[in-house]
Amino acid sequence: MDDQGLYAALIQRGMTRRSFLKFSSAMAAALALPASYAPRIAQAVEAAPRLPVIWIRAQTCGGNTESLLRSPDPKIETMLLDTISLEYHQSLLPAAGPGLDMARTSAMERYPNGYVAVIEGAIPDGASGAYCLVGGRPVSDIVREVAAGALAVIAVGSCACDGGAPAASGGLTDAKGIRGLVGGTKLITLPGCPMNVINLTAVIVHYLTFREWPALDMMGRPLAAYGNLIHNQCERRPHFEFGEFALSWGDEGAQRGWCLYKLGCKGPEAMGNCPTVRYGFGVSWNVRAGTGCVGCVSTDSWDQMGPAYRRLPSPVPFFPNLTTDMVGAAMVGGVAAVAGVHAVGMGTRYTRRARQGRREALATAEAGVAAEMVAADTVEAVPAPDATPVEAAADSSEADSSEADSSEADSSEADSPEADSSGADAPAGTGER
Ligand code: SF4
Image 1 (cartoon, helix red, strand yellow):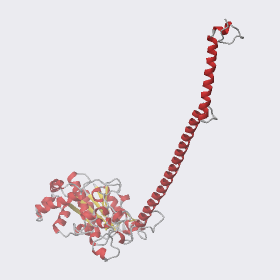
Image 2: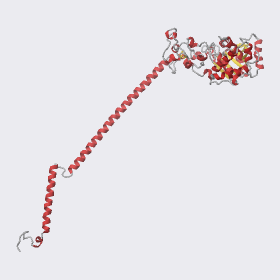
Image 3: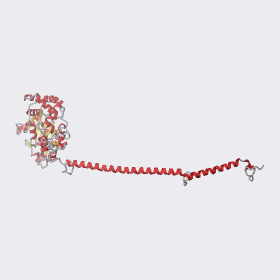
Image 4: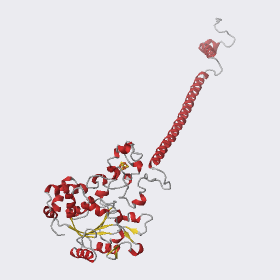
């Protein structure tokens, strides 16, 4: 374990420049950075001293250590191990007993606040911690001690993050995640069963390149790796959209690579980058292998996401047997019912309005006719309301005529001087002079 830079270590081991740049590009992709960052990453990593790592194994199956060591490409595996300087690991160091404990305490002294603590496995609190002892001490004490002097603590795998399988219902060891043991030290969580070692390497490379840790979500997970739904990145997603589902293992749909949702895939509720980064350095992942996502990156996945091959549980509280399809069908039915009620309501309203309009038009028309009739009656009634027009005209002319005669008579009488002087005995017009 020397302190020379990564690139020098790689050259010593016969690595090529091409492989190193390929590694840098893979890191840029894992950190969700543009490919143009690859040269900057390469420059920073080749100049930086390797980051000291103290790796503690607690209550674990060892899957995360396997993830660190197994690679289809031995060159990349070497690069990963050379990105860090692994100062302590219970399973990988040749020492045992007190010598192993001394390796840990020695590393902590040599790199005060300059090492990264990687914790793998759950912390069993039952029986005063007796279920997992390291050097005769409860592993919780060791974790607390190492975390106190670390640059950051990285919890690898679901067991270290939230207790994982040992903490699932029925567990006997009162297992928990490490969250309560790290005090004020920066905590980064990489859930998964196991975690993807590309994500661990990307976190370290981010620190070496930018001298800061990557952006995290509220659970302490790097957003670049855990910020997207697995369902949204899955290569079988088009089949989901077209309603093409495998209905039983090995049926035609399964053989044709159709969506595994109806066989229990948890991708629609799990956040991670498994479809893009994949395991075994890009070789495959659960869905590609045909088994469906089990949601191992989710909190309390064993209790919340299991059983592995049962369809996702009901999203509706108190109705655990409802499936998402049933909820969807109920929602569609509900929307159709509401649309129907709305249509009936609108139809009734328009009918009522139409009737009202007709009534008003009729009333207006009747009022108009009545007004015309009244007007007509008024005009006809001026000369003689009860007479016919002919009689009224006749009466009118007779009246005019008598009035004219009367006036003529008055006039002749007024114009005749004899009438005034001869007196009443002398008839008008007689010549008795
Ligand atoms: Fe989503 Fe799973 Fe179907 Fe992929 S296989 S599209 S993750 S439900």
